[in-house]
Length: 328
Length: 246
Image 1 (spheres, each protein chain N blue to C red):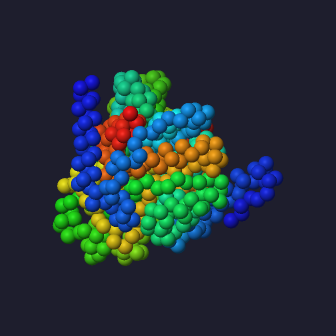
Image 2: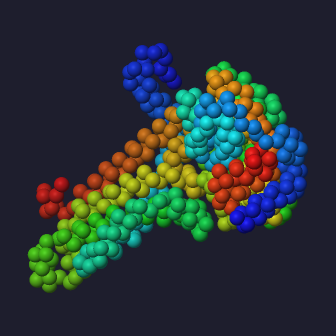
C-alpha cells in the first residue's frame, strides 16, 4: 500500500516536472496549441449517466504502446461515464483498424489525422494541413462521406523526426535537418522499412531537403534506438512522442524539421455516425474531455511508463485519469 | 488495372483472379503509389533487385548451416553416438523465435547481414544435423564391415561407403533447411537488408497488389531452390544407387 502510494505521488510529481520542463521543447511544426494550458482543468470528474448503461461500446486501437494507452484511456473514461465498455486493443495496421470500425467489430479507435489523410484518403503528405484543426476538419469531412465521423483532436501531435546522438549533433553542429547539407553523404540513416520510399520520410528528405545519405537501412521500429546506441546508425527516424527523448535528453536529440517533411498528426477518434446517434452526447463529450490533458509531455510520460517502466497500458491509463481528476 | 465491378462478380472467383492479375502486373511494370511523391514502385527491376538480395542472404545462411551441421552430423553418425543431441537440437531449433533472436543479436552485434545470416542459419542447422546423423547412422552395418574388411580407414568408410549411401537422406535435410531459410529471409527488411519482404511489410506503399506479388515471388523462389537442390542431389548420387533411390 505505502509503496504504491509513494509511487503514484512520484509519478504525479514527475508528470508536472516534465510538463514544465518540456512544454517548450516540442516537436516541429503545428504544435502551437500543444502548450501547457491543458493541465487538469478539463471540467473535473466524469459523471456516470445511468442512461448510458444500455449502450455497449467496443474501443479499439492499433498494436503499439501509444495507441494501446489511448485506447485504455478512452475505454476507462467511457466506462466511468456509465457505458458498457469492452476493448480490442491489438488491431495491427490502420487498414485493419478502419475495416473493423466499418464492420462494427469495434465502435471506434484513435487515429492520427495525418495518417488518416495519407493512408485512407490518398492525400499527398506535403498537402496535409499543418494545423491540427485544419487536418481534423479535412479528415472528418472525408470520413463522413463513408458514414463515419471523427471527434476533435488531442492537444499532442505525433510526428516522425530525424534523431541522432547528442555527440553526433555536436560533432557536425546539427540543429535543423537542413544543417545536414554537406555532411549527410557521410552519414547512415536508419528508419522503418516503410520510410524508404515515403515522401513524408526518406523520399522527402532527399527531394525537399536535397539530401543524399551514405546509405539508408531499413530496420524494425522497435530497434530505432538500438541502432543509434550500437553506433550503427548516425541518424535514425524517431517519433516526437518517444519517451526516450524525455528520459534521456542528454543522449538523444531530434533535428528541427525546418522544411516540414514530416506532417504532425494529432489524434482523432474515428467512429461510425450511427454509433454516435445510438450512444448519445456523452460519447463525444467524454472522449473530448479526457483527452484535454494529453499534451506532448504528458503523452511522452505515459509512453515512458509503458515502454521504459513496463507498466501495462491499462495501469498507465488509470493513473492518468486519476491524477488529472477525471476519475475518483 | 481491372477492378471487378457489379454484384454478380462478388459471387464468382473473379476478385481473386483480379488480385492475382494486379499482382502480376505489379511484378512486371512499375505502379503509381499515393505516398511516394510521384515515384513509381514495383516493376521487374525492383523485383529482380530484391530477389537477388534474398538469394544472396539465403545462400549465406544455408552455407553457414552446412558448415556447422554437416561435420557434427557426419562425425556423430559415423561414431553412432550423440543420437539424443543430434535429434533434440533438431526439434528445439525449430522452436527458436526468429524475431526475438534478431532483436537480441541487434543489441550484441547490431543489425545487418551477419545478424540475419546467423538468425537464419539457426533454422537451417536442425534439419541438416538430424538428417545427416540419421542418414549416416542407418547405413547397413554389413556394408561398413565390408569396407573395413577390405582395409579402408575410418575416413574412407565415411567418404566412400556411408556418405554416398546417405546422400538422399542428407539432401532431404538440406532441402528442408533451404526452404525454411529462403521463406524466412522475407523478414530481413526489419534488420537492415532489403529482401522481397519489403513488398509484404509495406502495404501502405505497395498496396495489396505488392503484398500478393511479394508472396508469389517468395513462393516461386523457394520452389526454385527446391528444384535446383533436387537436381544437385541427382548429380551427387552415385550412379549405382540412382535406380534404387527415389
